Structure formats: C-alpha cells, structure tokens
Amino acid sequence: MDAAWHVYILQCADGSLYTGVARDLQRRLRQHNGSLAGGPRYTRGRRPVQLVWSAVEPDRGAAQRREAIIKNLSRAEKLRLLRA
Image (tube, rainbow, N blue to C red):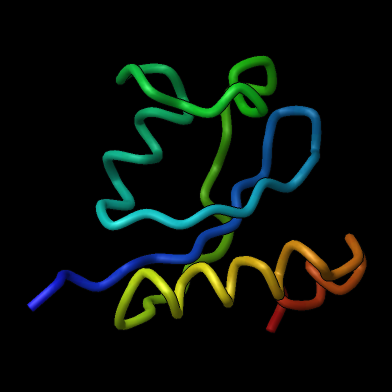
C-alpha cells in the first residue's frame, strides 16, 4: 500500500504562498529551504519558507486534485483556509 500524500502551503520570506504535494513532507521542506537538493525554482529566491498548512490525502491523485483546487483560490481565500 502506498504511503499517504501531503498537500501543503508554505509562506515564503516575501509573504507569498506556495502550494505543493509531497509524500515525505519533512524532506520536501528541507528541499524548499535549500538544505537538500531538488527544491523548486519558485522558492529558491524566496527563502526561508515556513510550513503554514498541510493535509493528508490517501493517494497522489487525491493530493493533486486538492492542490489544484487550492491553487485556483484567491490569496484571500487561501488566507481564510489557513485560519480555519
């Protein structure tokens, strides 16, 4: 059986929000912050980043669907999600 997938939102040093999915969330955070190779280009120039929200999904497909929904939200809607 596959491990669970995480959907997450990061707040970057410039205040922007980044949404992604990962199987190993702690490893992915280290990549985003540059302590491991493989972080996305978007966060490379906006470090440090901080995890502000995450949720667990049962599989990659569900995680990616939820990621797409979140990415389509406005910034105000994403901030409301963070407060909920």
